[in-house]
Length: 219
Figure 1 (cartoon, rainbow, N blue to C red):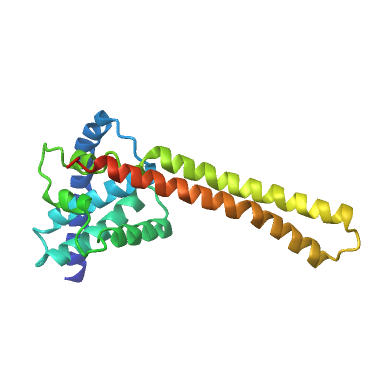
Figure 2: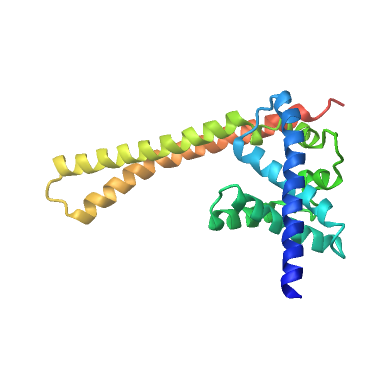
């Protein structure tokens, strides 16, 4: 009996994944046509939240409650990632992250999940999700590209300043011990990283605030 139930659940899971991939194949060209300029991380997360909604809708016909259907949907997302070649541990962490991001600070469901759950064949629901975020600097590809470049600048710049500090102490204060040399190296690196980080933070806050103002209609 247990084997029969397990086989039935496995068949449902396979059917859910197949259905979800069909929906995704239908929606992605509509999104591609829009040529959105979103950060890859945001785009992937949004799509996965949307797919959880699609899966939840699918499982509604088999589960007693909406909560049970959503739980099955998150499990199905994990299995789909594994079937697509993602390592189990990574897929598990990503599924946990998607679950965390599925609930907003005010307790409401994420828009992508909600529209995925309400989606119908032939609609433009995934594109509607992305339309909602057009103009938001915090999810733009340009801002995230700047963020990635900033990390490289901080790393290389900090390393360069640390080496310069060590070189200075070694040349001009040869009697210094190893701890002092290390401390000077870390201090010079800190003197570079701190102001650069603060400047980057100010730029980020400025861009995100400007993005919010640009979306606010004039009175």
